[in-house]
Image (cartoon, helix red, strand yellow):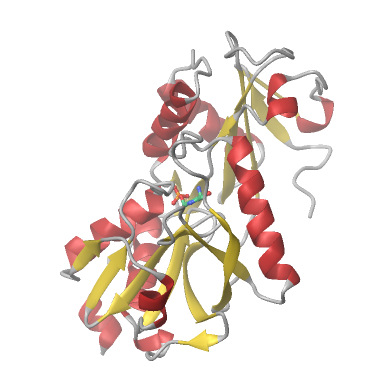
Length: 299
Ligand code: PMP
C-alpha cells in the first residue's frame, strides 16, 4: 500500500511540505524507544457535501492527554492543528480519508522524559480497515499490557508492538483478527478496536481500565442511549462472550464491523438482524450527518 506519492503534502511543526522531502532523523528517541504518541481520525464527505473530520476535537484532546500521560511536551494549540488538518486535506484534494497526527521526540539516547517534541500530520485514503466482511476472530495468546506497567490510556506508539504481535498471530493461524484478554483473564479489546456484544436485547462492553477507551466506543454508547438500546459496561470472560447473540468491533479505522465467529464458533443471531447492525447503520448516519430512524431499518 502506498501512503504517499511525490505530490503528497504533510503538516510538520507549523509548515506544509512534501512528504517525500521530509527529513528522517535516525537518532530520535521515539524511533529507538517507541516514545511517541499518535491519533487516528477520519474525514467524511457529509450528506450536504461538506468535508467534516468526525469528532476532531475529541481526537486532538486525546492526543494532548496521551502526551501528558507519558511526559511528552505538548506545546501545540488544538484549534490551530484542526484548522491545519482541514487545510492539508484541501491541499491534497482529499474529501475523505484517514488522518494520522504523530507527536515524536528529537534525538536523545537517554531514558529521560522529553523536553521537546515535534508534530506531524498526514492523511491517506483508507477503506474500512478490517474490511466489509464479518470477522473470523481468534482469542490471542497475548494479553493487553498490565496497566501497572504502562499508561494504557495513552495512545502511545510503543504499545502497538503488543497489537502487532496479536494481529500477526491471528493472521498466521488463518483468522482475520485477534481478541486480547486483560491480565485478569477478562475480555479487553482488539489490537486496534473496542468490543461490544449483544445478549437478551442488551449491549455489553468492558469498562475503562484495561482498554483504550475509544472515541468510536463513546459514539456507540451515545447511539445506544439515543436509540433506547440498553447498554451495560462490565467485565466478562471468553465463555460469556461465546454465549453472545452477536458481537462487533468498533474503532475509527474499522468503524463498526460485525463478527462471524470466535475461535471458529458462530453466534446465534444473523448479523443482519442484530443490534450491532442497527448501530452500524446509525454510526454511518452519524458520521455522514444524515438522519437515522431505527424503525425504518427494522421494517
Ligand atoms: N483500542 C485500540 C487498542 C485502538 O488502537 C483503537 C484505535 N484507536 C481503539 C481501541 C478504538 O479507538 P477509536 O474509536 O478512538 O479509534
